[in-house]
Structures are given as structure tokens and as C-alpha cells.
Image 1 (cartoon, rainbow, N blue to C red):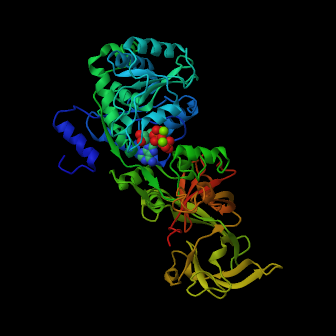
Image 2: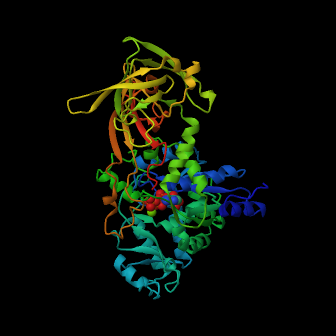
Length: 570
Ligand code: ATP
Ligand code: MG
Ligand code: MG
């Protein structure tokens, strides 16, 4: 307890526990099931679930904020649950805002009875016109002074389905001249005759976010309701509803939950805002991610180019690397854009420590060792990790013909080229030093084979192995290697701020056409035998993962997570 809290939110919680305001801390992560979660949501997940883990007795609910039927889908509910668990968190309880529809309704009746809510007949355009502007106060609706009896009658008839969509709203009676526009008689309920994924046709009216969210928090005994900065101006309304409904002192309102066996001890929750996570070269808006999927710019929500959690997972980003990113960024009220390179750095750091090494050749050129017999075959032993013996070792077959990377050979080498060139020497990783004696070209003049001799004194383990040559290159035995489909992924957008439309271009036009390239490469057998989702460093190339859906030993498929070094740095 001696060390300083990591951020202002943890400081507030620590103070609240120290002062006895709360005995424990209870949080929630409240996604709307209208899409899959993205990297921005990871910040809210790590914060809410992380805090619950850190403070004794704390817990965090997963709440599906399902008050917008029509846009929501059970497919997304399952996806959200999956993604939260994949990130490494388990919820205390799974709740839905729709679990509380009856309570919200009773609470609205109470507000009407207390003279704090009224039924309005203005349509959406009229409501907007009456609302005023930042500099001009709003005007009272002509329906604002309806009697309690008339309001109760109309609201009950709204609930009974007597009115058409948009024809009536229930509004809070607060202050049409309030400086904060959110307090100018905000809507509580609207008529929407549409089926809901949980409640079916039971409700022709649905509660608004500002009303449902704070009451859901209170009903779940939430102590600290953490949300993003855009809700800062909504906080006075949050507090207004919490105080006006006063759930802790009105058990009759939440009796239906008790009857249904849901543990209910309403709290007076406090909303605290923090800044959103924005990532360069990315989009963090569910609506736009949905557009990428629906218009076919990507192959689905789990396309490895997407920064949805399932896309990142499929790409090979690890849950640990995402948690590391969030921890590094910290929590504040300062809006900022995180450089994508920072995220890549996190996954490199994690995979450097956790991914075994393998050899693969992605752009193959044949290298033949002429001073070995035709049928030469050896089994070499390679350490799986250069810095960690606990990874053990594996066998790698070696023969007279191997694949090397085409760009590890240069017929006319540029200055400072330390790999293979005519008459030059290079070390074949784990084998010894080879010298290029001859090159073979096809009819077009393209080099198709380099013929070398292997210095027998330089073999691995012999005294001559220490002889200095400048370069070391990797290889895969041509007869033993396994062909693999390799999907080379890169950033989905070609510019740092695709969302910035000040250049007159739509964000869609900034899609990087090079973000996916599929090639066939050669991998050593030990890589082809990977389990789906197993990570490797392919030496000198980058970090790769066996595709969780398409990879099979007889048809290996690897996705490039990230190159070994930042290729985007200027
Ligand atoms: P989107 O605009 O992409 O639809 P949202 O905020 O509407 O996002 P919700 O499902 O309502 O999505 O969000 C669930 C929780 O995740 C909220 O508490 C929200 O504040 C938080 N959240 C969403 N996006 C981010 C982000 N970029 N950074 C941090 N938290 C976020
Ligand atoms: Mg939303
Ligand atoms: Mg939003």
C-alpha cells in the first residue's frame, strides 16, 4: 500500500476505501452489443476488470447495454464474451440493461408522480428547435405543464403500444434554460415498436442511454462508473437521475429483480471519465469497422487487418501484448493518439520472450552445396530460443540443396552488403561457412540457383567455426521443407490519421492496398507441425502465428504479426 497509485482513478478508489465511503470497489464494463469489440474497448476492459482485481473484495460485471434494439445482435453478445475472456478477464455477473426494463418503467412512473417527468407530443424536429443552442436558452414545450394524471395516463398508453414511433416521448422536467444542454429536459423514453433480442415484443417503448445507464449502475451496486470523456457533460444528468429516482430508498421499484432472484442492493454510483484510446493508422469506431466489413473492404470482423480484438487475435497479437499496451499508456483525462509503433513494440517484446524460433524462407532461391554428396542428409540440433534454455531444442534436417531468401544474394552487391555475393562467403545458420562459386540463370537472365562450397573446417562445433565472416543467413532444406501459405499483413491504413478528412478524402480512401499479401514460402517441418494460434519467430523475418482457423499440418498457414523491426519509421 506504500507505493503510489498508478493513476487518478485508482487514487480516488483508494481514498474512498480509506475513508470508509465504500467497503469494496465494484465496476462494470458496459458494451453495446452492436458490433465486435476493438482495441479502444481493451482500455475500458483492462481498467474496469483490472481495478476490480487490484482492490480486495472488488469485482466487475459484464453488462450488455442493450437498449437499442434493431442494431443489436446475439452474435455480438457471444463475440463480446469471448473477447473479454480472451483478454484474460472473468466477470462477476453477466447482466443486461434489458434485465431492468421493468424497474426503469416503474422508476419513470415515480418521476411522473413526483412531477419530474412529462409526456411530450413534439416530434424530433420540434424538440430540436425548442432545445436552443449553446448561446441561446431553450423554450418550454407546450406540453410541459400537463397534469400528473394526464402524464400517467399517456405514459401507460405509450407502454400499452397505443402510439406510433416518434409520436410521443417521456422527458425529464429539469431546466430548458440550463447552460448544459443535456439538462434541457432530456428524453427518458421513446416509442419504438421493434422486437428486442432479449425481451421480444414485450416493450413498445425503450429507455434512453442517459437514463438506463446510471440506473443500471445503481442496480448492480456499482461504486465507480468509469466511462470515456465524451460523457463528462452528461455527468450532471447522471447524478440527477440517480438522485431523483433514489433507488436505495425505494425497494418497491426493484422488487421485480428480487422476485427474479437477481441479487440487488442499489448503490449511489459515481461516474468518472477518462480519455479514449486512439491508435494511429487505425479506426476505433464500431460504426466504421462495421462499414469495412459490410462493404467488403476486409474479409470479416476477424480479418487480421482489423483492430477488433478478434482481428488482432487472428493476426497474432497476444492478449498479454494488449494488456501491456494499456498498462504503458496509463489512464488520464488527456486525449491523445497512440503511435501504432508503440503497439507493435509491445507485441515484439512479448513474443521475443515467449515465441520459439524457427526457420522459414519466404522468397526462395536455391542454394546447392557442390562439395556434399547428392544424397547427403544430416540432422542438426537447434536451440528453440537464444536467450532461454527452458525452450529446449529441436532437430532440423540439412541436405545438399537448401532454400535461402532471394535478397540474401546479390549478383551486384550494393556497398556494405554482407550477405552472399559471387566469390563471397557467408555463414549458413547452424551449418558453417559457404562460398559462392557459380550462379545459374534462366533464359531471362534471372538467377535461379547459386552453387557454393562448404568449408568443412567451419562446421558448427569444429575449431574453424569461429572464423569470422560478416553475414549469417537462414535457410530451409529443399527436400525436407514444407510449403506454407504465408499471409503478410501490414497496417490497414496508409496514413496515420485516416479519420482526418480535412484533406477532402474519405477515410475509406486511405485503406492500404498492400496491407495483405499472400505468398507461398518454405518452413521447416517443426513449424508446419504447429498448433493453431502457436507463435514463432521466423528468424530474421518477424513474428508469425499459425492461423487459428485455416492452419493444418498438411496445409500450414501462417500470419505475419509484425516484422522484427519497425519498417514504417521515417
Ligand atoms: P463505438 O463508438 O466504437 O461504438 P462505444 O463507446 O459506442 O464505441 P460501447 O460498446 O458503448 O462502444 O463501449 C463500451 C465501453 O467501452 C464504454 O464504457 C466506452 O466508453 C468504452 N470505450 C469505447 N471506445 C473506447 C476507446 N476508444 N477508448 C476507451 N474506451 C472506450
Ligand atoms: Mg455506443
Ligand atoms: Mg460511440
